[in-house]
Length: 211
Image (tube, rainbow, N blue to C red; front, side):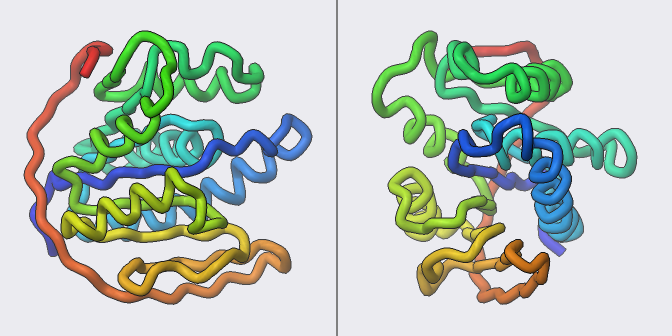
C-alpha cells in the first residue's frame, strides 16, 4: 500500500467526435472503464486527482471521481487544471453542462491563463504532472503529440504511466503500463507492466485561482 494523499493526474485527447447522438453511450461505457482504474488507484492509496477537463474522458473521469467521493471515499479530492479561462467557450452544450457542473463541485480549480494561446495545453499538462505519482492517459493513439509528450515526461521523471486504451491502436512504449479495453466487440483484455515512483502533495479546498 502506498502513502495516502499522493496524486494521480489524468490526461486525455479532446473527444470532438462524441456528438450528442453517441454521448450517452460513450459516457457510460468509458465512465465504467475509467472508474475501474480509479478504484485500483484508490486501493493503492491515491486520494488526490488532477484532471485537465478536456472534452471526453477527462470530464467523464471527473464525474466518476465525484461519484466515488460522494458515495464511498469522502477523503478524495478533485483538482481541475484549466489551460485558460476560455477553455469551454465554444464547446457544444452537451459538453459544457457536465464541464461546469464538475468545476462547481471540484475541491480546487487552477487556471493557467486568461485566454488561449499556443502551448497553454502542454504547459497545463506539465503543471498537472509535477509532483504526481501516477499518470493515467486515456487515448487510442500513442503517437498523438500531446499524450506522447506527457507520457515521455512521466517516464523521465519517475512517474508511473498507465495508458488506458478504449479502442485498438499502436503499441504502448515499453515502460508504459497499457490497459486494453477494445470496444469493437465489447471484449476486454488487461495487460500490465510495472514501474515505481514517489510524490508529495498537500492541498485543500479553495476557490478558482490562477496558477
